Image 1 (cartoon, helix red, strand yellow):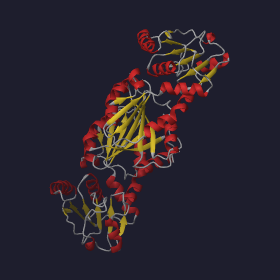
Image 2 (tube, chains in turn cyan, yellow):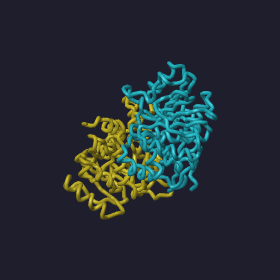
Image 3 (cartoon, chains in turn purple, green):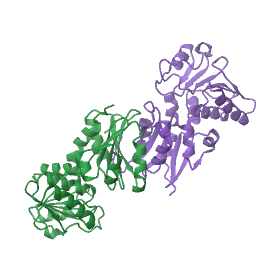
Image 4 (cartoon, each protein chain N blue to C red):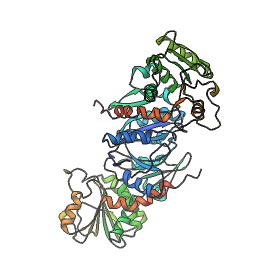
Length: 267
Length: 267
């Protein structure tokens, strides 16, 4: 899958804790190769306590052009950006850092757009729909913003961390007055349910919503990439729901991410 | 060449300035794959000013198991080792750092043994021979020590940095009294001439020795890997000498390096 690996290879890292579940090393590297680039995406397992020093050091690597960020570093990542996209600034988070000049890095947050793209690919148009997002962390916030921008009629946000939940709801309400409210684990009445919590990565995790209350007509999406079919998605399928996996979401954004990461620095 | 690149891939870095010329990314990765390991060696271009912070950060990467060191970082590398081989301590330099426990790293310096192995493969037995080493840096010191250990009769060391040269000669003389002396760019009378300077990486570089004075029966070796046939080696061939390239040297040590790097940590 990697025609050239040599001293001239350009690097893109994906930083996470854990990192074993990520699809970027194979998926992004495949996109790089398809574009004719001698570039690779490699996983680095970095704990939160080591994150800031590691990113500062990685940015000094002269052949390191991009840093992809996954759980739990997306909020911490933004402070390492010299500039950032509107959506990254609004969300206070970044999942993508790319070098735009010798000593200058730009942050972006593509998770939300990726989920909306994956939903559209699966046949779901968010406009006018009622959506429930579970989890108000970095990825959940990004999905919430992208759903507002895709003009959902209702956005309910649930999180066990009520302060984090309320903060997200307040900020989203400013963008779409009247459309945003507090959600719970009750999925009844929603056209779309998105899990943006880690619940489902371990087989013993409880379901993030009560599956018996899922509307059989609903779309259910999960940001988790391993297992691909989380217990929530399996339960949703049994209810007759259509499902969108974390892999679907990654596949929907890999090309766009590769284009951003491979854009040559200005200097 | 890389059957599996995913979130579980273990990392080995090679750090240099420059790094584009290194053979480790393809060569070591090939050795890892041949041993059935999901591991990769990737190049990172790090300037001396950034080296210490980068190594400290890289050691915090939980899937980073090894760090290979090339020009000009071999002396700086040793201070990042919690323990080191005898030869690395004697030389004050390391070309290989490997994780031996969760938070413990061991340094080694395999360049000298690699050169002697490559010479033996090419049919040259150093015992009793007269050797001239040009360059008293990290790699040159390692080659000098390995030649002493391989029982050369004479070891002459040349370096434009006379203090560095004298320091190396003093230390080697303690190991092999009477055998070690100051060398010049005059290759006459030597059975073996080794270039351990960067002269030859650029086409405009002067030759490290006067090629007209090479003995036609001599072996001439160069540690430079790009170009593979340096101007010195080309001139040596024209004189009728046998040559050993930096690629030969790398090939002679890649398997041993991979074995060291893949050894599992004690905890």
